Every structure is written in structure tokens, then in C-alpha cells.
Image (tube, rainbow, N blue to C red):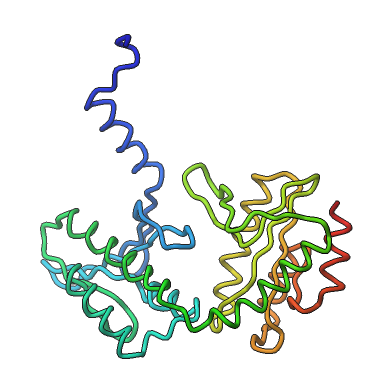
Length: 261
């Protein structure tokens, strides 16, 4: 092996620190500092923390309630005793505390970066509790079976849980993806609360994805019987998507798929 291909410890250090610098964003707010961490929630969004100085030698590190609200948006009931036990265990392992849905930790000055990293890892571990969300499986099967039948009738074979690049470092998985003249990314809206927050996130995602994938046609479907879509969320869906409608509106979906061939 030539020396030009040899990887040194300095090379590796420079590689990792350059990645950290690329993904790190820091913003001043009236309460303190908001900053991103090099870890992500299951949906691909980076963890954002808030650091505020409450005493001359004391700092409060917080997720601003994002982690538990994200779990709730996935349909997870965080109030059950089983879920509370999981939360208590993970909070103890990562030195987290919880108050009114906000996860936080007190840090002393001088700050230790390891404490901040452990806190972020704890948030990701808690977000992974979404895998315990089995009670929605039967409901979601209805929407998924309907979508799969529509694709089959249209002669299309979509990829499941396909990952698309939002940025060079960050990917987002979509429920169904068809690569063709105008590729189709189909996502089923599964949240049972915070529709506007969820749709804002998807609105930004679709903008970024459409800039990366020329001609990409996003389709978002929801349950008209169980999800009441507010006007703001509907505006985002209809503005950013090729089609935004109920999964049971099969004629509309067929027409859209045919137009994209």
C-alpha cells in the first residue's frame, strides 16, 4: 500500500472534526444558545439543544420538549405505566430529568462536552421508544394495504422505507418511492396530534428534497376518518405536494400516478 493511501490518526481526527464543524449550528436567543448535535431522531432531524445560564455557575441544558412531543406525534402514549418505566430507566442512565414534557439537565461551570453528548444520546435513546408503538399497527395496515393495492393496480413496484438525501449528511426515509421519469415519494401522515408542526417539518423536507431530486413528486396521504387537518397544515400539504388527500381517495391517487408516468 502506498503512503498516499495510508490513514493516520491526524487524518481521521481532521475528518471527524470537519464533519462536526459542518453540522454544528449555534444561534443566540433571549434565553441562551440553541445548537445542533451530531445525532438525529429516527426521522433524520438533528437534535437541537438549548443551553441557558440560570446562575453564575449553573447552566440548564434542555430539549425544549421536542423529544416527548415527537414521540406523541408518532402516536405513542407516553402516559402509560410501561412507558413511564422505560422513560425513568433511560433518564437515570443518561442523567436526564423531566418536567412538564421537557427533558433537561443541570450542568456546572466549567462545562464538560461529554455531559452534553451523553444528554443528546439520551434523547435519541428515548425517541427510539417509538418501536414499542404496536397499538397502531392494525390502523396503519389499512392505509398501507390500500396504498400497496393502488401501486399494484398501476403496475408500479415502489421501494419501501427508501432513504433520500436531504443534505450530504442527512437522509430521510419515505414510506414508498418509485424511481421513474418523475419519481414519486409517498408518505402516509401518521401523527394523531400536532399536525401543523409535523406538516411544517415535511414542508421543509419536501422543499429540500425537490431541490436535490429533479422532478420529484411528493404525495402525502392521511386518514380522513381519524385525522382532522387544519387549514394551515392543508395549505402546506397542497403547496408542497403533487397530491395531498385521504388514502381512501383512490381515484385521485390513480389519476395522479397516471399523470406522472
